[in-house]
Length: 144
Image 1 (cartoon, rainbow, N blue to C red):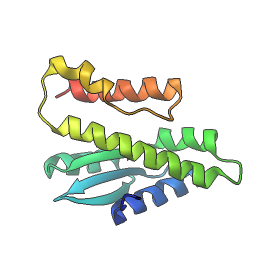
Image 2: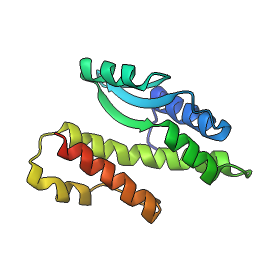
Image 3: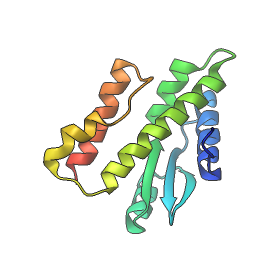
């Protein structure tokens, strides 16, 4: 059975896919949770949105940065299968990010970081993507 996808998540995947295919790096894209509802935010001013998220204690699920858009445009655009592949990879990234967000917003001890990192799903990522992703997750966990 397919998992029901929220409107915010659909909008996030649609907006990020368009940005990647068009190499539109004018905005940064966020998927957040506010009062249990997922919302898609895209904005030119990264710091303004980060401040808004922290001020309102919102749960951040996923961020697609300008660098990410540029990297994925180079990597995945250029053929008829690009759009489907990008959407599939974005959905996989959201699933992995959900688990990281649950860990990051939950209570844990710093000694548990290695165990938490071992639970982060990285299927479908290249070795380079996996290393980079886990380094960002480690940084997030260590900053708590």
